[in-house]
Length: 253
Image 1 (cartoon, rainbow, N blue to C red):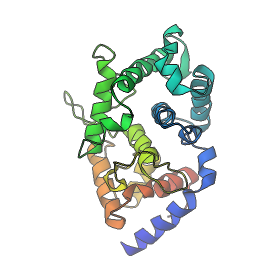
Image 2 (cartoon, rainbow, N blue to C red; image 1 turned 180 degrees about the vertical axis):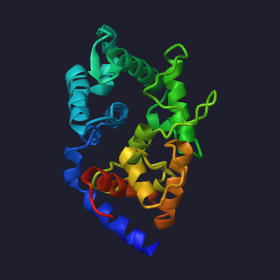
Image 3 (cartoon, rainbow, N blue to C red; image 1 turned 60 degrees about the vertical axis):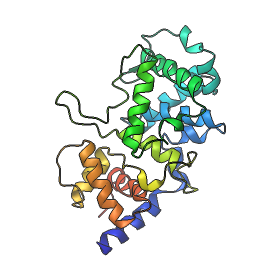
């Protein structure tokens, strides 16, 4: 265990650096200074964060600085999204109609709350906060859910989702390492966060015998986070940088 901790601490320090930001969608919440702009940028950037990172960044620029003109909160609250053609594409299977869904939901959330954080901080578990966010977005859209906001609960025989993208958003917003993660939200401790389980993290987690389960679902996230908490109880998700970095770069382990 000591050898594993040394390895992961070294890799986390290597990849958790300022240079990481320019090649990652975390650059989008970094681009803003107003609280609600940061939150919106974090949510929208995380929602499209699958596939090639260059494509994600291109799509994020199109959405946040092209469509929204670099003023996401004002854009949403003024209802400017209502003028868009819903069939246009933004990123892979994410279309303008999906963007409109999120804008409508966020407008309703900010009409009820000062910050998106309020959906999370009354809860003991970040899973409950994710559920609250999903429910709040659906409430503003006639009860309809969207596949782009994963379900943290099991439904009709389907396992609870790993919610990789939303857990990544929470890492950005709740960890404050002074390097990559922003730490905007103060009410959720890093020890409460769950590891964002993408293909790189899951593959390296299994290679290091940190994961026993074969499926990439909520239970696997909880298993991996618990194992990483044995190495660093106060901040287990810092090892996301290590596992992701090793996987992307093909680093030796």
